[in-house]
Length: 254
Ligand SMILES: [Zn+2]
Ligand SMILES: [Zn+2]
Image (cartoon, rainbow, N blue to C red; front, top):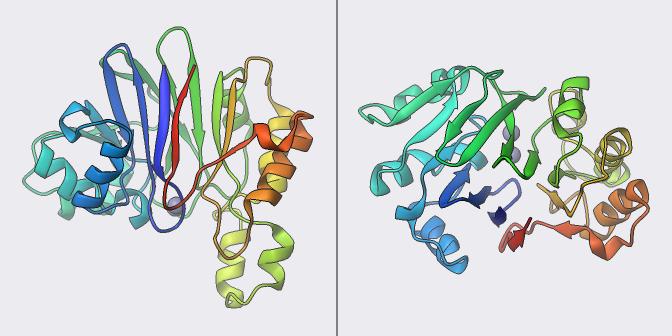
């Protein structure tokens, strides 16, 4: 199994996972041409995607999905709640599939386990993707962790983990107060220390990769995110990867 990011942050997200000849894209917050260029950087053609899995209806995740899926005839999977929230954008498209946020399903060689998360969307999920040998956990866009989130991520071989903001930077920064409250709220985004607390709470004995993702450009730095996760794992900060908004990250193999 291998995985890579097209880009990560509030301006657009996309992550590819490949194993056993099946390649999927989780979210697409980029325009059709931009997404294709980002895939090309990773050596991928749009036609090589078996599916696009959507996490929730916020535009940095679903914004580019309808046009890309229609243009390249890629099937789309999303929770029934997410589909209900964006149904008009998928009108007339045949290969759009809904699923229950607690049901595991398969796409080719990959087993997809949705993980429901607390976030200000209709039925948001994140994903654990497995191929029978390895499991990758992807967790962004949640305000707080839950027992179910931690049980789902425990024992994974790789994690992509939201480190949205540093709490001090958010508090001292110049965002309007209501926006600060939304981001720091229970249905907002995970701060560095909360992400670190997840690592401290779960079984990390199999972890080969940890990548911090969805970093705020205003309220966080790669150094702060790395330091927080490294202290939880008692590892060197430079072992922790960071997903960039512009460039994502290159393939990592499991
Ligand atoms: Zn987001
Ligand atoms: Zn979101």
